[in-house]
Length: 312
View 1 (cartoon, rainbow, N blue to C red):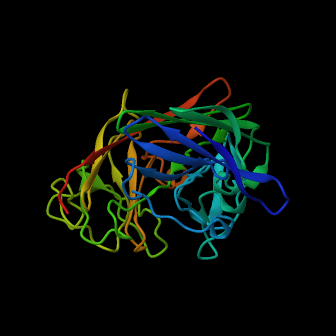
View 2 (view 1 turned 60 degrees about the vertical axis):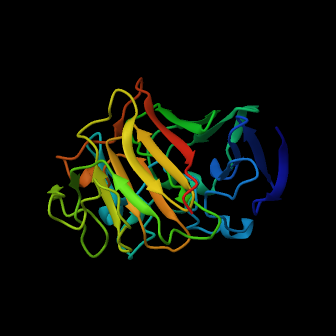
View 3 (view 1 turned 30 degrees about the vertical axis):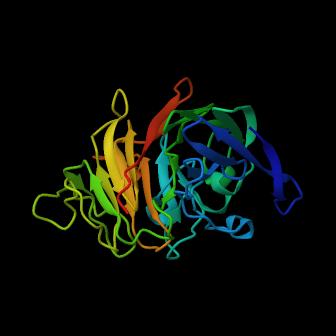
């Protein structure tokens, strides 16, 4: 178990790397963005895409951090909360807000409240009005390693009505070579959200049967996916199987209690699979909604379960 300073953000505050180990699995977590930087079996290759630290400081560096407080896109960068319209940062297509803009938690330093060999807990306080979102909010991320799995729990509270839909944005690359070439994907969803030319949901909830979005059996994914797969109409009571990636000698099973799973295959470095609520929910009242009220606690739990398959 180590805790090292590896750089600093522009204002001079240090970025730290926390090392974790279950004995079967090793992991590294950064205080920048509460990022799960790398996962590996001891002596094996990294199972996540990596980028240099300077690139992680760029506005749209979404390689394996926590994104939020609202992940994914908000159409027209506006939403009504408790009867009042709020405007957020426009940072995509001159029309949409993506991952809460430049003040999103992926670019922020989180505070370490726990660090031991088998896990780490990080916390961040978001002031009222940051990025246009109301409420003084506190978000917590907990990584816990047990044998060959990582359990990730995200929680949040607020003192005023707000929106809350954080997500982990990992880029998985399972094997000794870079990227996801040859990987096979399984998604346990019978519905998907079609998108428009701004990658916003059209509002339709489509049955995947007979469509290119049917990943209920493993296959090499299409390279144009950037869609939410619908796991349920509300969060589940406990994490259940949501997706699997079969790579070069390794397999990853993803379990989550989230009602949605965003899958993106648009970059060769890896495949982001992001448990979250369905995107642009404020504009689609028939979607599971992402409002968080004072006195409530947002809680989302996902499990990453790794296997060495020996198939290379």
